[in-house]
Image 1 (tube, rainbow, N blue to C red):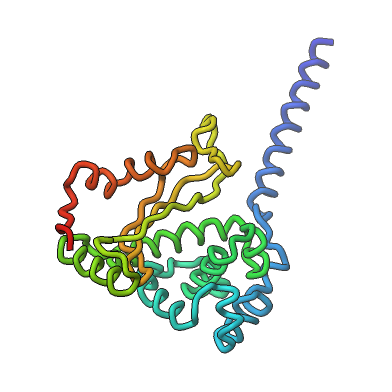
Image 2 (spheres, one colour; image 1 turned 180 degrees about the horizontal axis):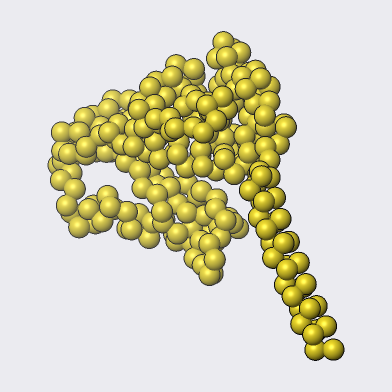
Length: 251
């Protein structure tokens, strides 16, 4: 009887080992991730391949989708492109060019639609689109960083003169406003990001000159904060409140 039990245990262990070996072989030979056939048609049927050039040639349609002219799009891409260097691709035939990455992200930012919708029409997986979105936004931030002017006294005087000439506003060195950017509430954040409009957000605060061009931006204040607290928490706000900004005298 005892030998029979030992024999059964040996058979059971052998079966487990054989199953483990077979499973390992299946895991090695079977791809861990299959590409959806819909996504495989991106280079032939994706929005970039089929529609982008046509939109460039039709200015009203391009502006409707990207909220800028083709000339502005090309100018910004020229600035951002050096920061979108193409990485080595294990599937060269399926690589996404820097221009396509830029186009899909710019249309997503302009439309304000849900992420998976834009990813679907460009035939990019929503997971890959998330990576592209982060890459392009970082490139935009780096590329346009040098475009924000240094705010010193001569610059403030120029801005004040333009406000006075264009808008009849003397002693004005900038128009300031904030924008709530909707986000998913971080875990354990409570009501910190919940704003008076009824959704969770962080605050983008920006200052523009008389030509409606940004001269300063600050992002990151909690959505629950009021305008005064948002302003006081920014670098330029602290400088103004502490009289460290070297503003010019009354003009």
